[in-house]
Image (cartoon, rainbow, N blue to C red):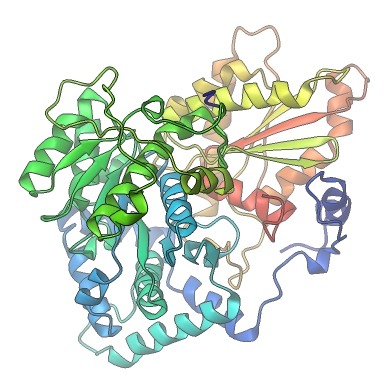
Length: 549
């Protein structure tokens, strides 16, 4: 087996050409006015009301300070809101939950798991965050985001229940944005009577509002890395403690993280919670039909996400009494390779059934190792935002850029479009991108347009515009420092929003002519990374209906 706003802008005016020039184009030329989703009034109002649950930057800081003192209150508040929304904790047990925490690959692991169980014929619910373009992406039934009508219907049901049950004594009559969506997802899954709910943790695990689940069927922990350190701690051990907070008595846990720094903590927490922990094996431990593994989400870094997803699916089938579906995938006794020094057993590989193979092949998860072609511009999109994920992203980009360049006469111009949020350090991320040899490095906030539309799915009211621009300037200076000593350090720019950044890229000829000594170029390769919100903003402008995935 081979493992493999503003007034209409120049950017808006070019969108029709960009869509029709893609080799993945649907063949329908869209006008700028047709780029956005046709929202019903009820859906627009729901999004406006949902966005009102976001807090401004100063309020966010105050809330964070309070949560640092009493983080457990987050779960207490979530349970209170569940009760007010007429969602019983015991109803959540009927969802047969697969709960997944981790730093790298949570969403991809959940997507693979959902794809496998759906392929086996189960009705699936999938809750993830953040969304790329439409908030409806966060709540999926059978792999598809809720449509606008159903989203609005479920939104207003939960909202009105909370509104009706509020009292004057309560400090907050409505939950914050993410907590509301978590409540809504649980309500949707209960009402839709899903066979399984795959729940991706928001931040951490121990105090995350998704962690009101009392009896998950199985828990998963993906690869751990440094992220949200202001909340989770400065060490991998501290981060692992939070991630293992989803372990519950009577459940079982599986991890794809074999790191010595974290395994001890995960094992200790598993013992404390009476939740047996096992390790997912390497992908080589499985017996695959055919000579080549085809995966729907590109990149070798997906291999550990795939093996974790397959083990989560297998254990879920066993623990929910669906073992009959395992008859065609008998377990093979395989000796684990390079087993770490720990007591947790490595789960055996197995003969992979055709259903598993098809699910892994057909799985899609936009914004991760994604390539979008727009005429002579190729966008390489990856929401990597931790040191390990940026390292993987750089390897993927260099490899894919070579594939795209294969056969072309002229070397492509390479551009970087980057942003990382305030609690992440560019010093720990940008060094991984140095060897990509970018001709240009662009830095912009995650704000899509210069003016925020409160009825937009992509409106982010939590961010301070000036602070974001300051962060962009810091990122630019960090990059400039890294380029010192190079014969060609390239050009750097800070732009005020994503739309302006894409306008800049679209007017590339005047910039690139200067760089190339007046010679035009045929191809431009743009890597967009550092933030899923940045990637989502770019996709929202060039592929708002997510048709090119």
